[in-house]
Image 1 (cartoon, rainbow, N blue to C red):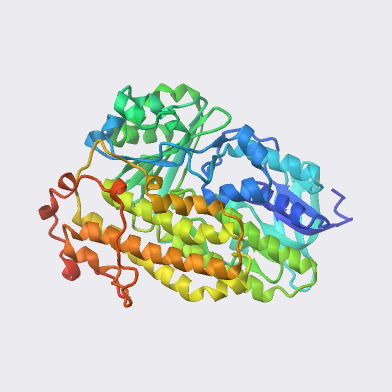
Image 2 (cartoon, rainbow, N blue to C red):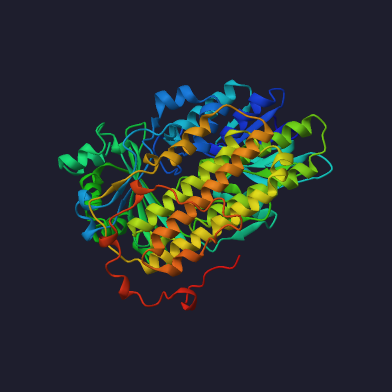
Length: 564
């Protein structure tokens, strides 16, 4: 750095060197190596591995971005862990025996991979290699002020180990995480109605959930003995608990809970979190207590979901990662939004450097990104009460995954999110998709209220259903042309409609009113039901207490079926 009287100029100043900022710097070095990049990170590096950061589980979009777009596959394969999918255990009989719980999860690794991420290890590598690739990296520096100038370079004041400095930059990208420097400065904060809280910690040992029982039939479901490489979810009414292994050898635990059902004060300290586990997840509590002496860290966060009015500006600023929006750690979408946001910002910066007018693209990217955020937040908002219902949650997880693979992930893998003309060409399909998506989230809530049944000792896997496995595996296909992709999206949407009607038919077997959320198509072309037998639980067990729930009585209940 030069002194305060000799200001250094950069093409792009990235304020934050965590996962979002570090990945953006690497992507910019790949796509526009001539740009002068600055990365400012407040933490001195290297940081400890397995400490404080969450977002350790990736899914298809984020994993593909790290693996293929950024060329990090060697690091992921040697320093991180491939993930044995998402795995869920639903509440049963006090949660004292894992074998009694309904299990949803694959026996083998899915066709398209994803990874468990030790964030400290990954971010240390990114900061080091970004410097090796030619970016200026300042760790241990704080941002004191940002002065945006739409007609000239922006100015940023910094303070670090060697004093105060000012830099100028054509672009300023806020990657500061929850600090949200620009979002707060510009009044862009938008609260979320999704009221969930979280607490998390790590222990410095490997926790193998496969060892939680010696039951031979249960262990035989995953012959490899690698259940522990899944992102494991222990599910109950209003909450879920995660277990995530890290490449460094540590294991991550977390509690995520609906604030109205499980108050924050019950989980916001380690001792309180363990006491809460004793009540709701006693088998897990015993494991945590056995490793309490190996505790590495503990943090808690209240009302973590947040929105934003704008994330990309033609005035040459942008917000990426949690500096912009955040939904929920369930389904691990954090790295997906980093991937999509960084892709958009890279496109804008590269085009601006070529002298293009980016105003229309920035507007289009904002609209699509925030629309996807709205679609994702619907997966969680008001949905936590159903999390202990095994059959309804199996339906929801399979539906949510199918929707993701059929449309959102496909658009990213096929590199079309950066093509606003293509996105505009599928607008009618996207409107239908978002309406169907919203209806199904309402349907799951209604079904849960109509089905308080108990299920036990069952197993299912989303990718055991042929059409779902094909959707996931198809993400790895080669890039195709616009017209073939439009046809594929239409075919996928028709499949989703059939899938929606199939789940509704299952629910309507016991309560006909539940069959009215997605109407029969006017053409009648896609009304055939699908074979989802691997995902159906024993209905006699599941519906035996239906008469005990009088509050759901079709359209006259306190829950109304949504309009078209």
